Length: 84
Image 1 (cartoon, one colour):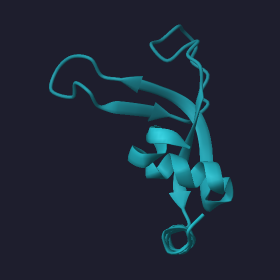
Image 2 (cartoon, helix red, strand yellow):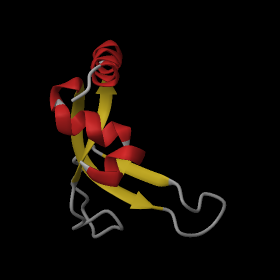
Image 3 (tube, one colour):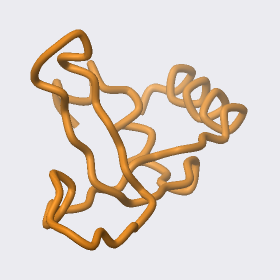
């Protein structure tokens, strides 16, 4: 699966077994100025604004919000202990 999964283990587990996590969809924005520069902000309220805002018309993304930690540990141990 290449170098990407060497550094992004979460993405590897999602690819191998997406049911290990639950997901929601929403809009993600990144703060570009001020003390919060670099902070990601996620809005999954599906709120309909009466006017055009910074959140209007932005594409949604799928974000993992919970993880079945024992199952992830079990999968990781299985992968580490086999020669596949």
